[in-house]
Image (tube, rainbow, N blue to C red; front, side, top):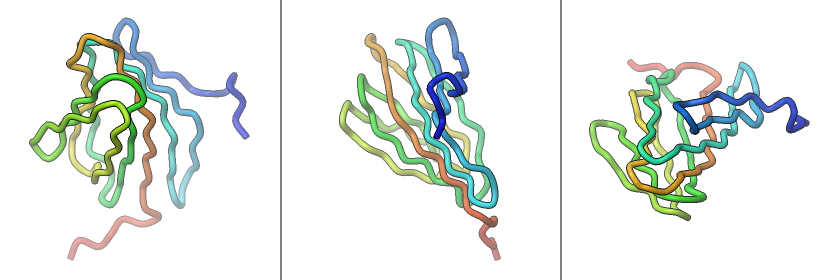
Length: 114
């Protein structure tokens, strides 16, 4: 169990935050995040190790997700799953606050790319 007092918060810009609610370490990494992006804010995510997946759902507002060179719009209530082994961006291009929950999972071992 993780108490609310132990949740790690990462500030972004003037009023945006990413909160790591709970996570596990190796051998299998799993994280649950609560993201809040103010209008006009964005976060550029680095490429994760091969095989990493992200799943998210938009709770409020509209998310512009850019991955694999394309941008996609996720509205309130929408859910998205994508491979996060390339750079990606979460952006709030609207004029209202954006909130989304996200799960990140990294594999136990890096998949063989033969």
